[in-house]
Image 1 (spheres, helix red, strand yellow):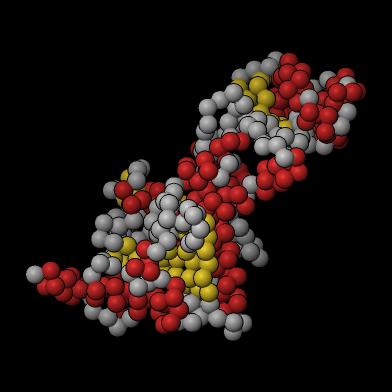
Image 2: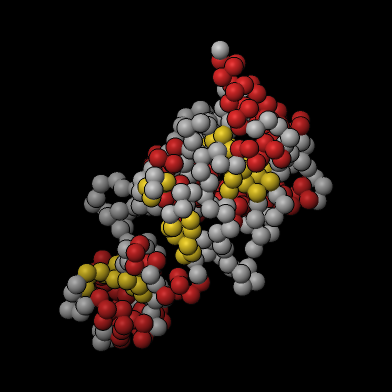
Length: 393
């Protein structure tokens, strides 16, 4: 799985999108050096804290090294330039122009290293009328349309509970970085990757975007239902809810027969997938008339036996305890800098039967400063600190 072994990545990343990009590359073996200010990545302060160390930070920063540089200090800035000049990849997720003002922009670093792959992640991209506007996951979900199709039809706007805009940007960024590295390996030189969170959020909404293009009508909130498939949503049962996805004619027939509602198979209102989707509110009520007489486990058992895709609506503790998670070994032990033990959800993808692993715990703030500076044949952190104090005097 360590296909990126030997690739050095310098990450100027805060909170989620940039660090997630770095994490994906680190999990594949890249040497990811996280450059932090003296106060550190803001996520270091996010609870829950174990022995004072953020579990949220740990989840996005395993397998990395951390160094502290004050980019407002000329000596530290020179060290950052030297570090980037010897890197294969630079990742940054500041507002457009911030790295240019520091002399760490793409054009500055390309002059030092023509093969450098430079990835900028921002809310709206590096140019255009919104380029200088900031953004967080929730604001990008709002402007990017996600909140318009999330929640119940008569409910207030809600965001997706998982920060999809942050993590979609990280996934796109990592993919394009790997593609760019392949170009470099072919002798074609590096380049600048511009990852706008608005664009990547629209990118993962391909079905909603194409629905609008095809109909001229905005997609609507449907709760857990689907605009083109039914029955395909959460259903109420005697002790809660479960999800069933009978998304074609055969599965619909099996689902109806499993609960002895054969008359619904013959009902002309539900004869095709298109008709079932068009009449899904009526169909839901008719199916729930049976489901509400049965406990969720019974509903699930009947659908499993009939071969109809279905699932309980799990909490995260229940999802992580699923035997499929254990089979793949996705959850692995991980140590925090103070020695406390926690767990990590490693990369879920296998390559030739091999999955992800934690080979370096998340770093304490600046833990590897001396180590990295020594590799660059630069002064140690203690010497740098003394120089900084002297300069300020």
